[in-house]
Image 1: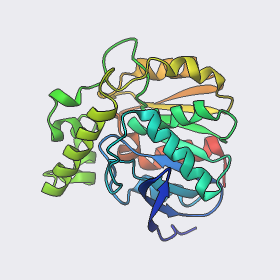
Image 2: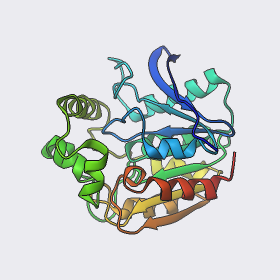
Image 3: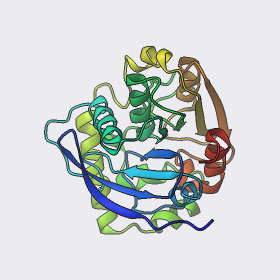
Image 4: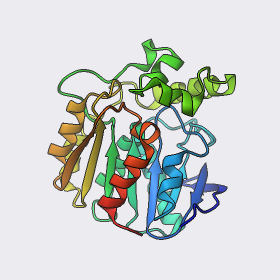
Length: 261
């Protein structure tokens, strides 16, 4: 089955204008991107369109969505995305959260535990690691932080180029500023989320790269402990950005877990 053409639109959710890319047919799957923003098209997104109706919203204040001046928490984004799903009339969607997007997906799951089909968390932030620390954006340069997400630096070069463009550097700076606004104290985790995840009653797959230098694997193990129906899959020779470093493998893991649309 060929990859279908993507459509890009601007949608209103809870009074916030969001850029939303959409393609494919079948079961609805919402993909929530990293704290570094997202490129418009990625092989992982394309691979999912072969089986699902895929939606990739750009987080408020990130990439191509507007920045609400009032926004101060990750849970604010989760509420907006709940509103987006409602606006689109999509019930029982599957959520795939990548890094920072995994935190948002977990918050969304905790808000309406039965109104999802599946939850996939990939190198998710949102829970404090028991061993190690989440990499600090404040003390890490733009390129160094983005490169830290990859085990194989050739994979980074393939996505962003050996020398990322000025536009890309500016976008990373904009995303970093937004992350400081909504996820600074405590940095990149919630003190309440682990306690709320016990109500989530849908199957969950937690995926981690074995060389994740951004979020320690101990955070993934905490997610598995907190979610009643979760299992862990560790990807060998892979960093934090499993979706960009091993897109076909991650798409297969997702498809095997969720089932065909």
